[in-house]
Length: 264
Image 1 (tube, rainbow, N blue to C red):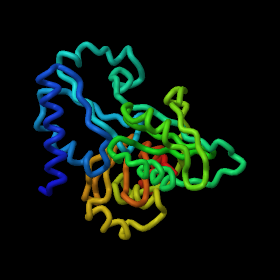
Image 2: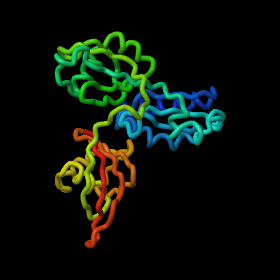
Image 3: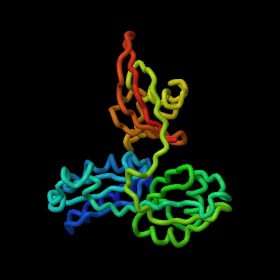
Image 4: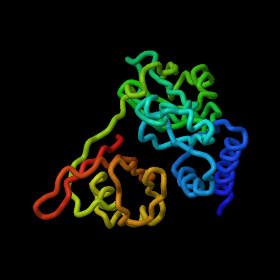
């Protein structure tokens, strides 16, 4: 176990113990795919508290964990407080909208441009989540404790003057740029779905999977033949991510027509 993994694992255990000892909800910062994988391999050691993952919207890649002691967990009536458990738990996540002050003179900004400008303010990546790019603006998920600082200080990205402010709309109103993909596969294996999503051969993906660069719901998967389940989120480092939405039908030759939703 390297030092980074050991620190992450210990931080997770410390927060879980704190939640149990004080009877309060505790939270991690946003975790990347490697940290989420460590989280999933650690939570088996903390059966004394409940936990939930959330990143500000459904199927977020970067997520934080909430540790909930039983005494508080049973106070929540999840079936009555929203569409998901996350609606009932007060996750300290804020969505910020970043848009050019003058759209006419705005540059075409990429994910890297937004992230670079944010990190140049001296902010640690762990307090920021996903950045979703729309045609004319971007949406940044961040920890509540850093929201005011970003709104006050994030004023320029490259040569474009921007306004950063809290997004006041509903979470479901945030636009997600996705592409629907349908195609036939011999079986619902990880390698076949990756090949369909990025229109490449299964053999070209073997190294990526075996090297630990593919994650399903935040868990590192190194088996090409891993059987993907409906609504699983598959992330491939350096390539992107998609949701496997399920089987639409079966052909006469026994192949499966499946549907994916790929984030673009």
